[in-house]
Length: 114
Length: 120
Image 1 (cartoon, rainbow over the protein chains, first blue to last red):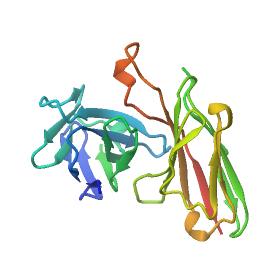
Image 2 (image 1 turned 90 degrees about the vertical axis):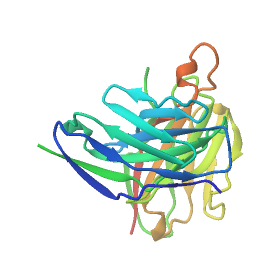
Image 3 (image 1 turned 90 degrees about the horizontal axis):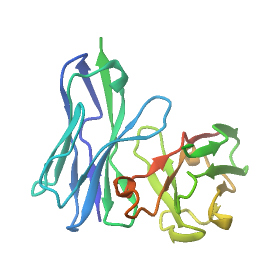
Image 4 (image 1 turned 120 degrees about the vertical axis):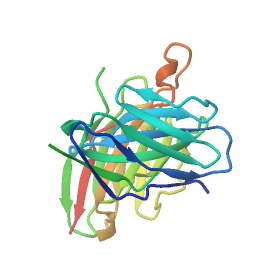
């Protein structure tokens, strides 16, 4: 069975600094997608970044980038130049091929200190 | 474009009562999902629809939960009777079928604001 593990329940970072959120997953599939979602206190889930497993290049979206280590089944999120608006719960998620079904980790609450 | 709409946003009921949630997906999105998010946990898929057909309901507690998507657009999720452990946020999400016109959003699910259910 596919599982997603986020081992950091809470993280904090100083404004303008860099923080890395960890995620590991377990699967026997070769074709899958990985995502990081942000859920602010208002609770609407927003996609931050995604990575296709077949791509070796790490995805980047402005201040957000990932470190995808397929052999290690690791998918960490790096937030550079942290802003107060980055404070939220972050979920790592895994999707098998075209099924659309997402499996989420437990989440990491990120606090950004001014 | 308008996002995924859900109502109500909040609901408080007593155990053994019934409750229903409504979801209106993004226009044109064929796939609709209902997730249950218990406080402090990640969302868990309850049911997935493709148009008006059920694709996956393996995690839906069918003795008390039911869902339908008549006409392949709006969807309702019902709990009858509710238990204390049903207290959670119920999230609806939708996804387009994708294709060459908009490949960048092919795999993205768009989430609604959720309905927070409290069972007393």
